[in-house]
Amino acid sequence: MTPQRIKASNLVFLAMIATVIAMFVTALISCKGETKYNMDKANDSKIETYSNVLNGKVEAVIGDTQFLITEFNAKNSTSVVFLKDGLQFKILDNNNRSVLVNMYAPGLLDKFPFTINSIIESLSTEEASNSKTKGKLEILLPKKKASMQDIKMLYKGSITLKEASDHKIVVFFKGSGVNGDTEVNKRDEEQFPMEGVIEINNFEIYDMQN
Image (cartoon, rainbow, N blue to C red; front, side, top):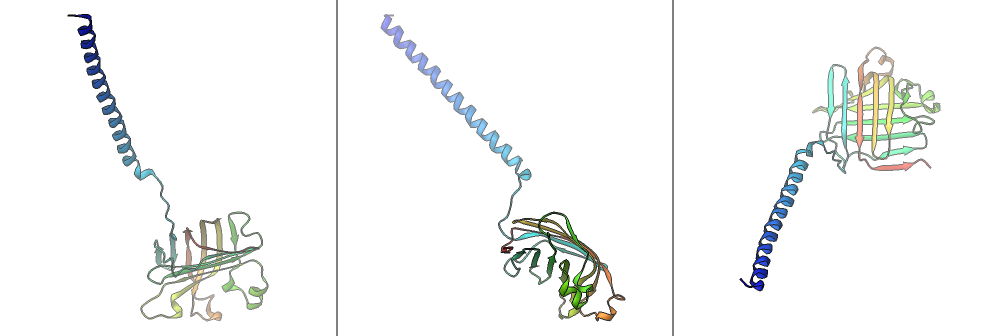
């Protein structure tokens, strides 16, 4: 063989080797990519996702009835109103069940948890008007035939604001409640246990703090 033929043969051999190496590297990269994809799929259950619509839960015991809301009606629920020393909101589900929370106290939004023991339903009109620290909590459990009895009002006990930010609010309450149609002079006699937790996320805000 001439030196030129040997050189050409070597070039062909080297080209074949390069092709094989390129195919191997491509396969290796493809395999790594597939492994990463599969790993990502396997870890999907560990990734936290956040919805951009109103969500959360209301879980409570009212008398001997357990009460749970896990889906809210964002259209019919109110914005969360932040006041200088207060917080107000009302949330509804798709069955017209609702939860109303009003909390007022100096420094309410400055430090958590913040507990209010002065419940508006147990105060006189004068006390409710003059008190700077007070809270109101109502749960509506509508029946086929609507009545004031469907309203369950916290009468005595406490409302605790455990967390409050622009995207999440958590409220605990515990005490005794009365029906909306219970006469004022009979409320002490017709109480029932009432406690639970309210958590809402991704709500609209109406800021009146300034």
